[in-house]
Image (cartoon, rainbow, N blue to C red; front, top):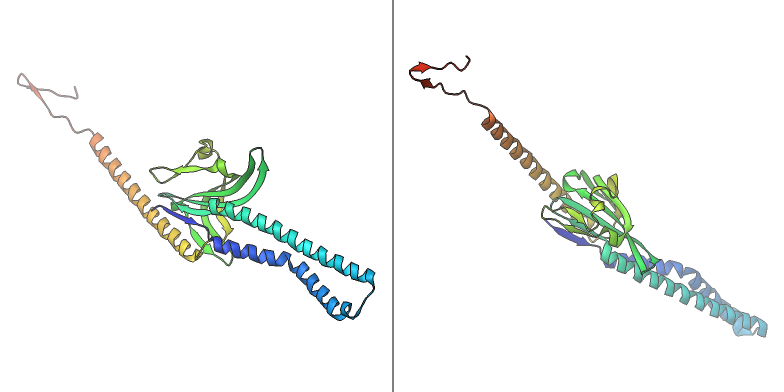
Length: 243
C-alpha cells in the first residue's frame, strides 16, 4: 500500500511565470509610455536636455526589468528545487505523511531548507477536500515545522514513520485536527480518492485485528479457567477434597 506522490513541477512553474509577469508590469508600462513619447514628441524635435532625460529613463527602465527578472528567476529556481525534494504526499502502510517545502535561509553550512510535515494515521483520516487552490485532510495529525534534515525519517516494516532523530517519534510536533496545504499536485482529486481508499482499507484491517485479538483473549481465558478436579480413591476410600 506504499505510494509516493511528488509535486507537479510544471504547475509550480506556471505560478512563478505569472509572478514574473506581474513584477514586470511596471517596466512594461514604462516602456509603452516611453515609446509613445518618442513617437509623438521626440521625433518632431526636442531640446538636448529633454532627450538626455528620455535616454536616462529608458536605461533605468531596462535596468529595473533586468534586475527584477534576474531576482525572480533565482528565487523561483531555488524554490522549485526545494519543492522537488521536499513537497510530496507519502502513503505508508499505516500512516500518511504530507511534506511541504517552506523556505531556505542562510546558515553556518550554507542554505538550510525548512519544511512542514504532517504525520497522520490512515485510520484517523476523516475527510479529504480539494478546493480551488488547496487540499484539506481532516483527522488527528502531528504537525512539524523544522529544518528539513531534522525531519528525515524511514518507513518501518509496520508501515510507520520512524524519524532519524528519535526524539521526534515521541515528543516532536504538535497535535492538530487537519492538514491544510496549497494544491501543487497533478489531479488532486485522484490523490484524494487514493487517500480515502487506503484509509478505509486500514480501518477495516484495524477492525479485523481487534476482532482477532478479542477472539484470542477469549480462547486464552477459557484455557485459564480451572476445570473441576477429578476425585481420586486412595486404598479403597474416597477422598473428600472439601475436608
